[in-house]
Image (cartoon, rainbow, N blue to C red; front, top):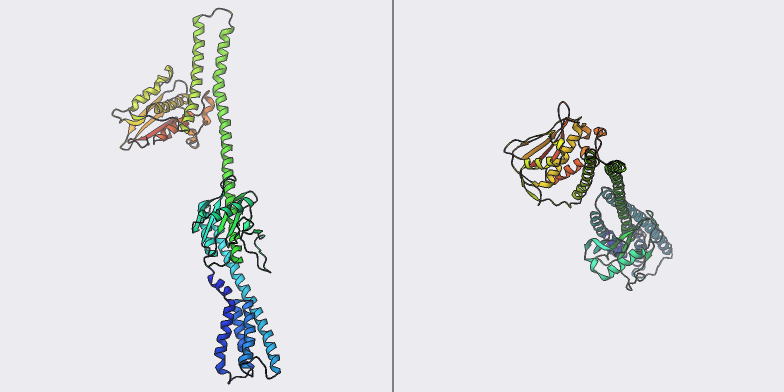
Length: 526
């Protein structure tokens, strides 16, 4: 990129010399047909053309060369630098002054036009790169685009981006283009030095009279200052912001061996700042995500403590009251009076044990520590196992009507029995005293469905998904004396692990039906 302008700048003096020589060769055959003063106008045209192509200094050189060519070939005596007519000295001096003035003015206009074009190109490139950065691209993709853009801008044989994942670790290359610069010892040494010192290495100084406008030009260290004795033509730009140092952008030597131009380095610096902004934004976003996770963990911890304190302290308080009452009686205790108290103690212990089991089950499911033992089981057997975990009075309220010929399902028996137990306890709790709970099932060509139906107040449409969240007990839970809000969350985790689904339906005239659907063929990785 920009090799044409760079070649013109590099060979400007040669272009000036060739232009004057070519013009003289063309003009000489007409020397006898035009007045000697008219040739100065043609040479001024040559000076203007050189100024428009090559700039101020080559145009000045063209003016001086034209001065001597006009004197030597077109002012008598021909072939010498002597002037026969003293008045021709005035013409020569005026020509030289006018030629230099034309070269200066035209060259400055050319330089301003080139600068304006360079600024426009830089703005276009920065806008394109900025648009890519705001599109939430990943750091790896940004790195690939950055090294590609820098390589095209500078014509470097190799470019690379080194990032520091941690301040205690050396920078590592995440994207490169060209030769494998990450394996060069000198490059690795200079990258480490630039990262540690947060200093630029090898950046060209601004030309005299040109001040960078986009940002303060960074202070540049030499390769010798960085510990490399030989001066090189590569650049090392630390990517840093006010918060931290992110890495180093390496720009290798140009393929044609020339030094990096200031306008190219200025654009590379701007791209490096843009990349630093993206890296800082990514860091801040990760910090924000961590902060959100900590806030959510604190909220869940508070909810857990609240639920645990209620569910554990309530039966413990009841146990303490019952045992205190038994111990403080002065008269001998009779079996008829002790037995109800012991039954109350057992109920409180059962409730305490269920709360602890629910907490342990959920933590093991979320940590994938409850390894399933998959096998083929009959649905009726698992419903029966769940019923045996219920108190005798509650079992009489449950009616199970499973159609004959239901196929076996490939599940973990203990986990599914626990899930069905939670559904049955939930239905019994919300059905009210004495209300029946129905269990049914059906089968299709692709899945098997099991449902638990109660005659309670039902579940509002906006709560049908939230009831499966941890610690959520629903708007109608005020009438329920106990419950951690974990039963349905545990059930959903078990069903989801087995590749099934669970949802809530209305029951007319009132009530709720929890439906489980599981594929007939196993889908879970064993």
